[in-house]
Length: 352
Image: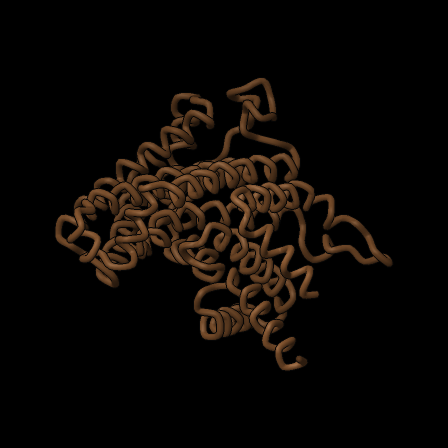
């Protein structure tokens, strides 16, 4: 066992170990839909976890990774990312329904609109030096403000929202060009590609001088400012990048489901669902949002179907699980292997 541990440490210290781990991890995600269908002794995982749940899991892994670039890296806790999510969803569907604009272009336009809205929110909040709880409440207020505006705007169909048009209405038919598919599996690989892109961006930021500035702001903003870091400017960079990619998640959502409404894509509880995987998985880490989403999303769905006989019981059990994780693992699930190795090391020392 000790030899195996030494070999792992030698690999872990290698310069490209992170890239190798990332390639292995995303390779496993690529074959995951096939793995859950494998039957062993008549039992397969897809009895509890379907491809639809995997798609939902990757949507929240993607959005949590985008949230993590801002809140995990710079420490500016946002509680209003549903605003960026909703902008992406509405921009994609509104441009498609009104002008027949391809949803891929609509997704990019939605990302830019969300980035501009994030710039507005960031400049306004940091201009008045809002931090901590005050910043979180301000972002929540901006998100709720946008939901009310959209809900009462007849040009955006008000509370009714949009129905996704048929692919034949603006393209030759279902396929990648139309951003519509007839089964869940192609959607899974599209959102997996999105997740790889945002994770690569998060990795590049983390390993650059921009990441150095972000983390210095998170650790001690006053100390960072005292050595010349333009803190407000870099906090705004974090908001804009995070908003741009969160809008992609909203655009994907609008093409995966048949309808969007203000009560779904701007929902108050959606703010929690977007950040929860990163908080549970490990804020500020690269793989924490992904691991967190693969824990909270399937668990939520399985509990919902398991305890559906008693109204609200699944939410109670789900809440208790999250409370236990936060209490006993404040650094997130991503820290569990290190704690296990430490425990294993102590056990071997006791045996010696």
